[in-house]
Structures are given as C-alpha cells and as structure tokens.
Image 1 (cartoon, rainbow, N blue to C red):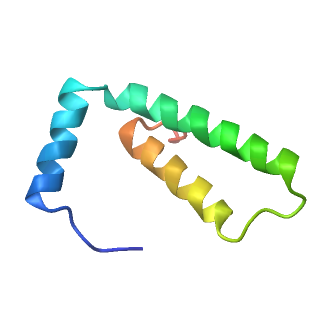
Image 2 (cartoon, helix red, strand yellow):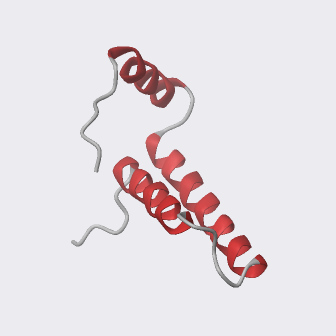
Length: 74
C-alpha cells in the first residue's frame, strides 16, 4: 500500500471535479459498472486473465467504496 499523499493541486482538482462535474456517488456507480463490464469481457475472451488484472479490478472497487461505501457492514 502506498503512503504517498496528493499534492495540493491534485487535491484541489479532485475537489473541484466532484463539486462541479459529477457527484461521488454517481462516479462510484460508473466505476462499478465499468469494472463489471471489463471483468465480463476478460472472462469471455481469455481462459487465463492477463497478469495483474485482478489487482486492477480490486483497486477500482476500492476507489468506488471510498466514493460511496456499498459493501460496508451495517
């Protein structure tokens, strides 16, 4: 896991993006839809997934969970 932090400029741009372009909840939904579609495509096209693809799906899901927790235990 990385311990790097965002630069002030990156942080400002992310805040601006989520304040003016798309709501975090909507972005999480888009990420989940894309992740699902990509996973289906990979499973249909290849018997063995490309190296590292599992971690890519994992990190996209983690980002979606940060933006809008969905799998949190109640």
